[in-house]
Picture (cartoon, rainbow, N blue to C red):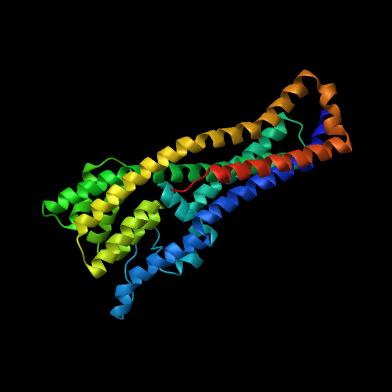
Length: 328
């Protein structure tokens, strides 16, 4: 009876897994390869190539992180699997190769498949579905580390900008100030500024080093800083005033973002509760009275009702998530 129940639920489970994977892929694509992301990469590449095109010299230098993701050709190269994984690992600050990450993923997938096959009586398709989940764990963990690190850098950036302004008033050069920031401020922002300082000392052009900084951190605030510095080097202006205004703007945005997050938390938790509640109640009722819930899984009308309900739950959860996701 249980095996038959699992077989009947298999299409629904495969559908749910497919929807979850598609949502994850859409989120990743929109963040890295959407029209806005491509426009930002192209804008940064145009700024970097501005000097080299005026002097008719090719841009030189490569960074210590498997080359530079700076020119407009980066958009095409990053579409390849290896380059995309390198960028993920770089932004998550993990010192492992893409091959090792794939090895971890394959090991978890194969190990999970073998363990479930040894201790359970699931079908081959179910085992493949669960092994897919196990194999995706390293990628989701890397995306989690990347988002956590980017948020921490954005939180530390105003303090770093204030420190840079004080150092510039004391008479230090901008590149030297980056090195001081790398020595004095906490991680992870100290490591990023220290990397910029070391790249400039090793001969990488300032524009290239700053654009590498923007690509590594994957932060909108860092992008504003990099674009502002590159434009200031071309057009001139008061650098200290620029950094002070940027620091104030970022602080105001962080405060406003916190207020918006608090106000939107009700909608987020309501959506989470409404999405989880049907599955929770269904599991409780199935455990307490299996015969009462049996027609829902065994009859054609019940299976169609479950299918439609799951689709509506996913659509409603995605819709409420979009409504409560307010960009500041």
